[in-house]
Length: 165
Image (cartoon, rainbow, N blue to C red; front, side, top):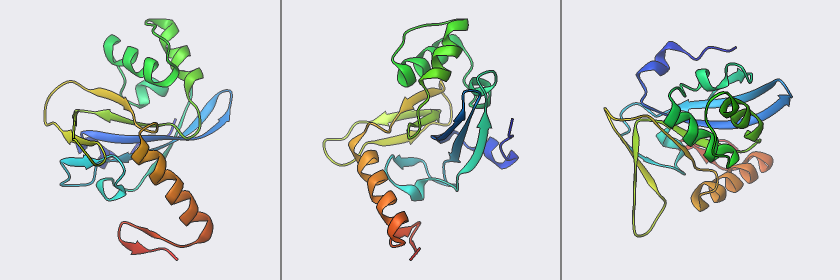
């Protein structure tokens, strides 16, 4: 188990990326808290997030490490990850076996803001129920991921406004 930095505790929303399935017993997740002062998050805008921190999780501790507790929240997470609708002990197993490399989720107190055009946004809430949302299927996130991958392999592009190449 890899604990997250104490500074993350102040954040209300996290972006979680399934980076690598290491084997049948562990996955590496990349966890990024919302950037300080950001209350309106564009799901495809990396400047809305602090740097990612790797987290190694196992089937036994994954839900707890992600702060996913409570029947309704776990059920929503299981449905988003694997498509299954289950609760109880089977939920942990379904969640674990549904994790695939490249999946991206938001976890925390937020509300999806519907817009007529442009990428979806998430408004951070100071109070309210914790939510779980899969975002890697959203067009803006898919296109942004392809762009970041292309920039990474070519050594060109920018992240957080700084030239990487």
